[in-house]
Length: 455
Image (cartoon, rainbow, N blue to C red; front, side, top):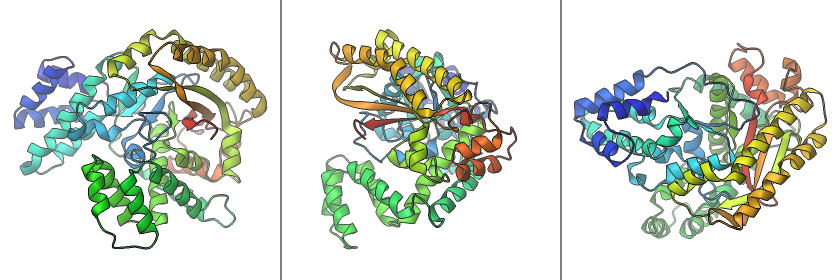
């Protein structure tokens, strides 16, 4: 799938940059249709290249990103959209040239070893060819925007630090089965989480990301006013929050806690199903605290599972306002960040071996904390001497094990792994995928999150 951007370069006859984008825009209707067909004809391998369990490679599908993008705009990791990467921005013509897509990509790469993202070019090509011919002059604009977005991260694509995939929705059947099991876990008598509690979590995150006029409007609607004045909505649009206003209207339109929670559950299930379908060798980037709560549904106490499975929590510098070129440079030139990624890999290797040997989670957490402490201190020292890393508003980098603690994820039995990982959720995914490989590979992987200090 990395070849889709190469296809664009070959068709246009230009390298990444303005000439490439202008070349795509200059293609005739027939040529743009042929380009879209060539993109979709690019071979899709059944699995992604395996990633070492000692490295963090989050996989981000478009469907998950679409739901979580507008949550938590005040994310503690500045510039992360709530899903870490705003994939929807890659094909949005209104956002072309803003750097929103590429900025999120490169910020995430500072603390991770690589990224796996759903291919914006394939998505735009499928949407274009699926449009009636009479509106293709409009639908082609998304393909042009996708080419511009991928051009911004061309160096990362060429070096395979960012790799792309495209499922075409093949994970949806398994995701539907998994999502159904997750919803069942929420409605089971005596469950630790309820739909109402998760709705409250969603509401907190959603409101945090709203502009002041939309917060006021939300307060009126939640107070029972079903026909409020639209003046506040117009104020938000006039202030440049048109995209967020669209999401606000959608949420209000379906203002039903169960529907909202089902959407969050489905988005999380799609991510897990896509990871396993593509070989199970990728990690889960938790889009928000809400998503963290969902990944261990089915366990007797999901909150306790989250605590037990957490491997590392380290305070790291936030990232200031940067140009894309700054982020590329520091990714390559920062000794402190290189040391961080190397020490993190060593710590995860230790965790893998220790869990296999049955070491208790408290001892593992302490060992990892000690192993990354020197690298963390180096990051903080670098923050004092550069505008790239900010000493203000430090954030917590969190990494945890998806599989069971105490050795059940690595080399354990199927029953042991399922039991250690939240039996209801993961056992459901095993069944949904037909258990074709016995133990799902992703149970050896990790979840990653960025949290406010002290949370």
